Amino acid sequence: MYYTQNEKILQVGEEKIIVGIDVGSEKHYARAFDWRGMEYSKKAYVFTNDAEGFAGFFEW
Image (tube, rainbow, N blue to C red):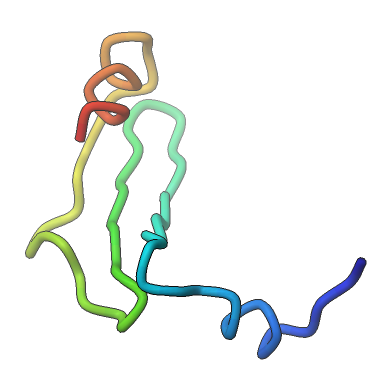
């Protein structure tokens, strides 16, 4: 099924967290928002492109 952008936005409810990740070759930057668009932290979470970095991201 295909959804328009507005239909996708309407599917975001209180129980959801939106995570955006800027992918780089050595470091990645992640930011998390709630359904209202409020950011969970003031700074992006930075993690390295290796198993240790991804493990830290998953715990974040």
